[in-house]
Length: 220
Image (tube, rainbow, N blue to C red; front, side):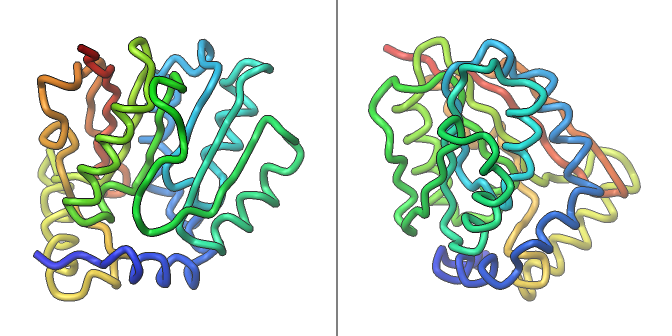
């Protein structure tokens, strides 16, 4: 099934801009679950792949992170980086933002952070790119670190099954209508030899299903 290319996704979100925040009506409850179960109060270094407008980062830094914790975020969209910088400017050097390329590389050293976060991004990326992101997450996370993800997913109750089936149908005909995002199952993306799942749930808001997943890297 065709997904948006990374270049197409970049162009879409450059134009989408601040309208991204309008999706809080269904993203909010799932993100609250992620925030409540990711032990951000014990974090010292958080990296977000796909920071968007900086809304998630602002809430995390304000309400969950210790005062000495450092946040780093990247996004492929120049518009999103500009919006996020404006939103996070009051945090000074605690919040660092970088415009990334479409190569989905993570500009960090091995075993250098304790939390790797990505919300509503892997459901947008082509499968090969998603796998690359997860490989990068495994590389940069410390042995006691956490991978913290949210994506839209298949429905798990009657109403959400109908809504997500319609979403999938729209995506299959024109991915841009739904921002390039399609229902995926995060648990299927994590090899059991590399990740230990610590928390997983599906949250439904307005019929839209989101999977919340927290996993620890298995380091050999």
